[in-house]
Image (cartoon, rainbow, N blue to C red):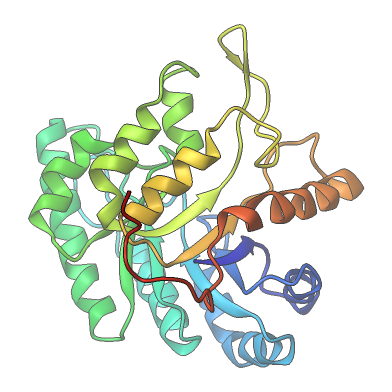
Length: 278
C-alpha cells in the first residue's frame, strides 16, 4: 500500500504533499471545476509532479449530474469524464472515480440500468487509455454507494471497481454498528482506491470527521480487511471537517501519517514466507 492525500493540482499543493513525505496525491476535479481547463494544465501538472517526486494516485469527479431526470446522458458531463480519464492517462494515474445521480422520473431499478450502461461505455474509454474506473461510495450526486447498488451494477461489470470510504457507510447508519467492516469483507476485492477519513459520533449524532486515529473507526480491523483482500493501492488521506483547518489541520495530517505507518507493511519487508505452525 502507498500513502497519499487529497490536494490541489497547483505547484504549492503538490509541494505540500511532498513536504509530508507522501507517495502520491489525489485530485478531486469536482462538478464545480471546468475539467477542460485542468486538462489544459497537464504539462504543468506533470512537471510539478516530477519536480517534487509525487505520483498521481487517483483522479475523481464528485457531484456531477451525468443524466437528466429521464435518464438521458448529459453530453457535457460525459465530456468531463472523458477529460479526467485523458488527464489520468497523461499523468500515469491508475484510477478514475465517478458516480451516477438519480434520474427522478424513472424507477430505481431503471436507474441502475442507466448507470450500468453509462459506466460500460466509460469503462471502454478508460480501458483503451490504460486507466481503471471506480465508483465512489459517497452519496453526493450518486446512487451507487452500497452493496444494494453494487450487487446490480458491479456484478454486471466485472472490471468496474469501488472507491471506498468507511466514514460514508458509518454516516448512513448514524454511527451504529459496523456495516463498513461487512462491506469491506464482502466487496474488498473490488476496491481500486481507498480514502482515509475518520468520523466520531456522540449521542447518536456525528461530531465532525477528525483525522484518522482521533475517531471511532476500528483501523486495525479496517487494515485487516484490506490485507486479506490483497489491496495494494493508495491510501488517500482526506482532510475534511471545518475545525480541522489551518495549523491544526496540518498537524492532523501529520498525526494521521504517523498513526497509519505502523499498520503498513514495508514494501521491502523480508521475513519467512511460510505460515508459522504450533
